[in-house]
Length: 192
Image (cartoon, rainbow, N blue to C red; front, side, top):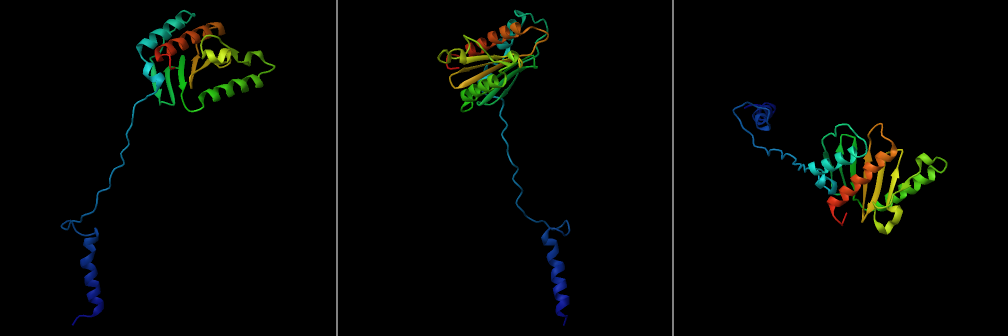
């Protein structure tokens, strides 16, 4: 009769192929890993919906009427319902903040900008009429000259238009930013 240690060793040898380390003649069944699925959605949001050839034509016209002679890069939409943008190769950048408290953050930004620029007029936000919500008066829109940005609030959203053309004077950049802001608001409708 065989010894007990020999029987244990023989039993182990028979069991090993069943654990996935044996010959090719044996098959094992194991659950295949389920690949993680990620749904990638395209850009969305209010500004994305109007970031098209029509807006590009309006932006180009606004820039040309304010002295810009360069070529406008292709519009690139990006974003979500909370923060959407339309970027013309950094020549013009349009974004809309629709996240909760967007108007409060806008008002804080303008207040803090004014506080930190008390002695430097160049850094003072400049209130602009006729762009933001009428209920906010001149607080509805402000030009930040050192950033070449026009910020405006309507409803619960904030529109930011940056005009980065060189070497135009501030008045020309501001003129283009105002025209572009009104074009975006016009495209978005009264609820903008």
